[in-house]
Amino acid sequence: MKKRRAVWAGERAGIPIAGGRLIDLHAHLWAGREELDARLMLEEAEILGAEYIAISHLWGYNPSPDQVHQGNDHVARWVKQSGGRFRGQAILNPRHGKRALAELRRCYEELGMRMVKLWVAARCTNPIVFPIVERCIDLRLPILQHAFCKATGNLSNESLPEDVAELALRYPQARFVMAHVAGDYIRGAWAIRRAPNVWADISGTYCEAGMVETAVRELGASRVIFGSDNGIAFNLGKVQDARISDADKARIFYRNAKELLP
Amino acid sequence: MICDVGCFLGAWPFRSLPSSGPRGLKAMARKQGVTCVAVSAFEEVFHEDAFRATARLTGRLASLPMARQFQVVNPLFPGWQRDLERGVRELGIRGVRLTPGYHGYALTDPAVQALADAAREFQLPVAIHARLQDERMHWISRFPPVPVKEAGEFLAKTPGLRVALLGFEVGEAGSISAIIKDRPAAWVDWSRLRCMLWGLDRLLEQIPAERILYGSLWPLQTPSAMLNLAKVARIGEAARKRILWTNGIRFLTGRGR
Image (cartoon, rainbow over all chains, first blue to last red; front, side, top):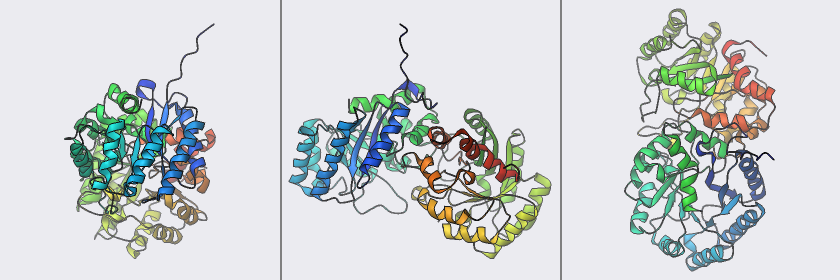
């Protein structure tokens, strides 16, 4: 009997994905629309052949302990239902102090989550974030840290790429993924060059030409990660059109994420 | 076949681009299957002596038969009427491009009405850019985006003019839908979709395929990102052809259904 050839990621949609394998390390279920988001993501992952999508829950800028708890439960439920297509990232609010650490423990031990997401509840250089980072070092969990640098003005507790670099240098044993290459990707890449324990994901921005090339040039392809922030097909194009080698593209699409979150 | 109504050549003043010359445009078109493209020059937006940039662009486009040159016009600048007339008669200009946020005028300004009248007289389509780049990422200077309300007032006052509204945010799709609903010959692009699952499908829930055209904003943006959305969109081939080709051609030429 003829053996069936494996279908490469992107093949069904006619979208070339270098290396043929794909992981999306940055996506969210938004409060109130968890089921819709999850179903749309699963459909997209199926068509594009993504190995998995790492998801976390977002409720608001400063979610309450109950909201965090419920959000992580939503994620865990969908991870279970997804047949391996989702991996869970624990959303935590550093303002919850010991409750945040207890929630981290619950997410790790009971819900099987192996990555943490920190958004905009606290700037990442705020000392209230440190205990979470220290616990993540103990548990060997990478942290997806939101960062953005907006010419129009950041949120009051929104981290800048310089903040992520500062935190990473304080904790060289920790591993961070800085989201969005911080939006202003030039400043973002420059800021974290000196912190080798920070990777940059390309998610969430418009499809600015030069973003991926800049990140690869300044950080090396081994520190650039594919993420979508909801919408894989769109974000694939940023890497597809980048003037970098196919080997580098394959690293970005798959290998770097696989090493961080096997 | 793909028709791209939103391309530029030249140097973007705020950051280096991987490619922004005629060879890059040609390579992008070959890769994406683009066979018709409306092109302007960034220098027309940012230089005070814009017409010189327009004339230079004509020379640069000579080896690109697929290109249709769109002249960037600032209706507040003295003598724009003469520049536009020269553009049409001497350079073979095929359309007008407006960048209000970069030139500091509102679409409701009477000067814009005069420009619309001139465009209609020359039978030129008009492309209006709400923005060229994410305003959150504009290094050094700020350029306000065009409000949808203004675009609506412009459309209401320019019946018969072919207009493409480019670079409006996807969150504005509802209001955009309302302003183009009863206004024939007005289209919108999807160059500002992001962070939205099945983005083009969802845009099509608000705006019919007859009113959507493709503008890549190359070389500022990566065209594959937008075209991937068209590839995975759960729409029929007829609708796909319409948004990637037919509507663009209709905007550019006034022909086709």
